[in-house]
Image 1 (cartoon, helix red, strand yellow):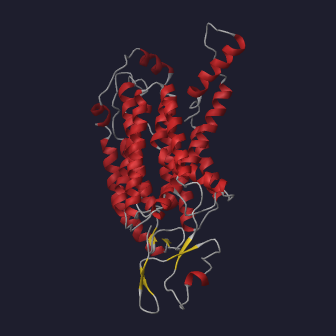
Image 2 (image 1 turned 180 degrees about the horizontal axis):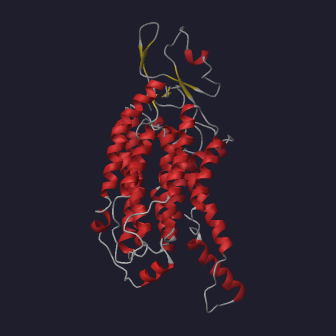
Image 3 (image 1 turned 90 degrees about the horizontal axis):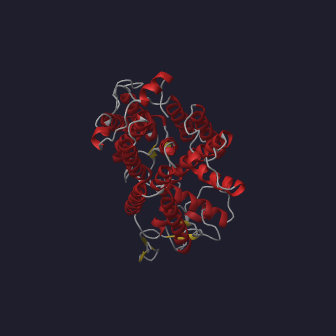
Amino acid sequence: MILGSPAQFAALAQIPSKVFSADEVLSNYVYVFCAAYIVAFLFTPVMRAIAIYYGIIDQPDRLRKMHTTPVAYLGGVAVFLGWLAGLVVSQYLTLHRADAGWPTNHPIVRFSIVMGATIIVLLGLWDDVLGLRPWMKILGQLFAALFMLADGIGVRSAEAFITPVWMKIEQFMHGPMAVAPEVPDWLVFSLSALLVVAIVIGCCNASNLLDGLDGLCGGVTAIIAAGFLFVAVHLAMIGGGINTNWDALRVIIGLALLGAVLGFIPYNFNPASIFMGDTGSMFLGYVCATMMILMAHEHAKWLLASMVIFALPILDTFLAFARRWVNGRPLFSADKQHFHHQLVARGFSVKQTVLISYGLACFFGLLGISMLFMRTRYAGALYLVTFGSIMVTAYKIGMIHERPATSEASTLGNATVDAFDSGQITPAGVLEIPGDIATPSGDLIASNPH
């Protein structure tokens, strides 16, 4: 899809396609990354000071939350400002291809993308400060998705999936056909709208669920952003320069996301001095969803590759929903049974769990990138086998069935146990004894972290 008048389309038809190098694609846009990184890096401590001043603090609850001291929120605002700064800088740059007769020499950032991101950030900020019901979050995410669809983004994203199926159906019903049948526009638009809404809502909530440990969501998203950026640059290199505006948009959004997250991570890695909150986690999910929808503009294979790159948040979400369904609990109920929580429960430290997650994100990123060099049918088969194997493995090692809830006690023997008084211990629960604890007789009891 190219932005321009009919006369410009005719002029573009006379311009031959071109293959670019990675340097030719990236060199014009690298300033986007720099601006996003600098703004996020500088504004994160500013937002921390503002959060502390106004009391926007995440208090530990000794149940779901892993931190032991109050930590400031609003880190997500700094990430958003960094991303936005990168997009602003892009408007002063030139396209990696600007031949004579090209509609514009500058990248075009669609207003609906920025507006949707603003909606998600305001929604998350409201939740961080005042609290918000899950259905209200989903309603806001739906509105952001519809905003993009109204601007024409993703309105044909499902066409690449529908066309082969439609051809098979037509051939089955009417026999071999000399001309390939066209898929009705109403069907393309309807299924594409459903796909866009599902991607936006799914990614926003997947990133939100992943944000459970210091540096986890930010670091994993940085790896995902790097994978998306690789795919975007690859598309710009081999696309022939015909869709230069869309190629540039994907690269710019990927660079801005990567720079903004990397500027925030130093403050958020364990021990974190600031959290991104729902503001940041839902925003990161929204930008990842936008990248995936923009990939779907080109070919089904690019969307499959981006979904594999984003696989760790998807996997955690599927496991969470499966676990809640198997155990008869509401799908949107909070718990301490996520993938990262279960690694900690199995004896890994917070830093080790985060680093393991980084490794898994790198694995999925490389797997997704490898799909770029396969035929679509093979890429789809690899996608199904990978996710099926992971889900079965997760079930077999017990990640679907809930582990007993644990609570801490500070003393033993005849002393009062705070956990019982506070109601944290239930008949099905387990009393967890952290560290080496002295009994009334003076002996030490060493707890086993495993």
